[in-house]
Amino acid sequence: MAQRIPVVAGNWKMNFDHLEATYFIQKLAWLLRDAHFDFKGTEIVIMPSFTSIRSVQVLIEAEKMRIGVGAQTVSETSDGAFTGDISAQMLARLGCKYVIIGHSERRKYHPEDDANIVDKVRAVLAADMNPILCVGESFEERKQGIELEYAVNQVHDVMRDLSDKEAQRMLIAYEPIWAVGTGMVATPQSAQDAANAIRDYFKKTYGTDVSEKVRILYGGSVNASNAQALMEGPDVDGFLVGGAALDAEEFSRIARLTSRSARRRLAHR
Ligand code: PGA
Image 1: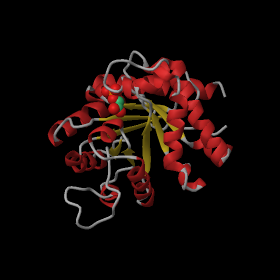
Image 2: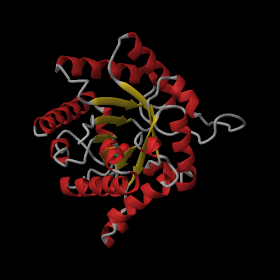
Image 3: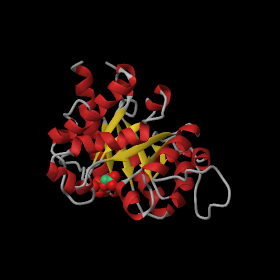
Image 4: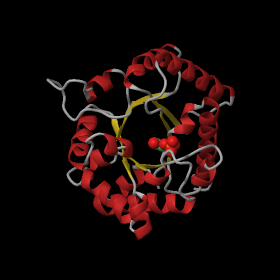
């Protein structure tokens, strides 16, 4: 079985200007260093607003911090007359490693749908970054008991034309819409069931090699009180954290709990 490095990604959404962002990053780096955090065993990534990415990047590089930077969305086009858009190439030049695509808030408030999500995924892959594709059911689908098919179909709609090489660079975030920003969290069993169903899809479509490499995150009201239980699921490879990523101490606790679970997982292999 491949050893997957868990990721704890903080999605700041529309919070923090560049001054608040750099202050937060310094505090987070200090908290993690102070706790002797195992940066090799667990990846830490922050997704600030576009306006803060450059300041965060400069700080991280200058201080040689082992914190990754990502973006919350991207344009599907590479350049041209697209007022207000930001291309994947621009993000790659800023040192971004990950880009969230298809977050439920973007699917709801912006026309981010399956058609342009495919193009955004391609643009991110072409710029040598890793897409974090968000999928997950609303309360309606959960009531009908079709949440697993729903999430897998969302993955399939985006993945259908991607090669094995591209597939293994994907990260999938299972984020049930009813759990995002609500304080309602999926049970560890249902997070594991969804992650397992998605991994199974990768296995059937691309084979074991790819499916064992793809990292599947859980997102939706993750905090330091539920992170450890959620990491019990062997297919859950970390988290996409919203609200709790706005508090450096809480976020560093989630990171430490994830890292501890990852070490335990390794010891039991
Ligand atoms: P939440 O957000 O942790 O506040 O529920 C998660 C997300 O939107 O990615």
